[in-house]
Image 1: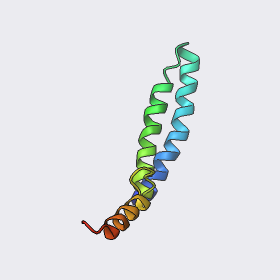
Image 2 (image 1 turned 90 degrees about the vertical axis):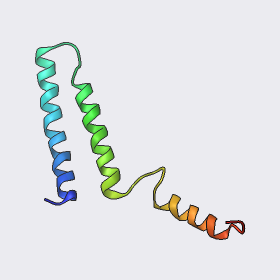
Image 3 (image 1 turned 135 degrees about the vertical axis):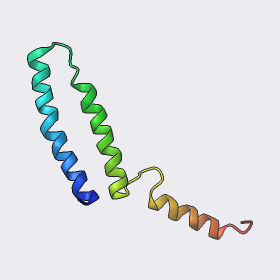
Length: 77
């Protein structure tokens, strides 16, 4: 299975299992424990999306291009 397909399968699993866990949480316990797996799994999916689609907002391709251009224009480099 390709990485992109695996990402979408993981995303689908998230949107299926988190609501099921939320229902189990609602029926069994007044403490909202479902928040912890939802946030952790969501963070994992976010990191996976960043690596899969190269959408790193901090050190992405535009940052790299700007740094290369800066070093090429620098006379002392």
